[in-house]
Amino acid sequence: MKTSDFDFYVPPELIAHEPAARRDHSRLLVLDRARQTIEHKHFYDIIDYLNPGDLLVLNDTKVIPANLIGRKEEGGAKVEVLLVARGKGQVAGRWECLVRPGKRLKVGSRVIFGDEEVTGTVIEKTDSGEQIIEFAGDLEGFMKKSGEIPLPPYIKKVESRKWDVGFWYQTVYAEKEGASAAPTAGLHFTPELLKGIREKGVGVSYVTLHTGLATFKPVYAENVEDHTMYSEHYEVPPETIEAVKKAKRVVAVGTTSVRTLESIASGLTTKAQRPACRQARHEGDTKLFIYPGYEFKVVNAMLTNFHWPRTSLIMLVSAFAGKDFIMRAYQEAIDQKYRFFSFGDAMLII
Image: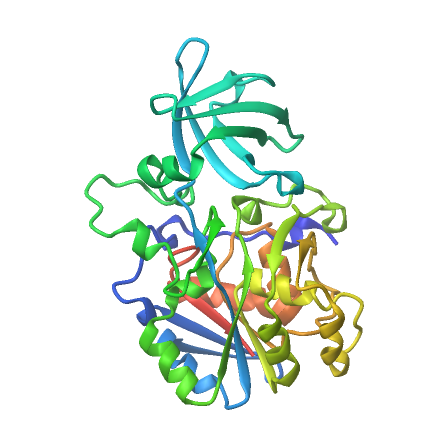
């Protein structure tokens, strides 16, 4: 299977550079896999597609102010450091980072932040371009004081921006800090909409997977099967496990929720065996790569945003709905001028 099979063109004017005026007033493209139909709705209509006994699973990760400005110890040159994910083995103070300009730092280089409140030492450079930095000092305190919420690089920086990044680039249920990118499918929910969903008899449960920018990177391998996913840490509380076992239908919100749920079900082969997910770990690391041919074991319906071409995300939704159906839906979304990517519109696949 070729990576080029998942390529398509998105007109630049369809890229959303700011959120919708109201979270739940974005547009919603509804795909019915069984009937192969496409409907055009608004996000608040999602409640009409959820039934009593369904379980909505949300990722409660919270974006941290992970974009930091420091200076190189030797020479004092400005360095921009983005904390992407905690380092291998979850070592305290160690993070995988994207550094600009990265060529200024070699293994052993030190970066000074603030009035030497925090220092960072480069201990490794990865093959994929990240740098492993070990921090000393009150990193969390410095982030809260001087860090910025990182927006995806394709979102234009406008000096006259009137919307609060810290509010709009978080889900309303964000709780557990650790993400460097928002799980954007969940940005559309409001407290009122979630209340209405619960009142309809739909369960709401949570998983945690700290989204990193690596999630959105293109697949560079020529053949899809040759791609390797980044390892990401997840947590699934026991109450979510129990809710999954009892649910008539599991509706995952976002690709991170999908990958987390499918990761705890590894080794299962049919939906009928879904209750066996109780045997899986509630916490672990996943490198699960879902692309066409994958058999879903837990997830029955999926809510997602529109994704970049040639990414593992478009491959995941193609595995769920079928590549031809997804490509047809994307072309219709483009023709109907849907808004794309993080602050864009949503797609419900049932």
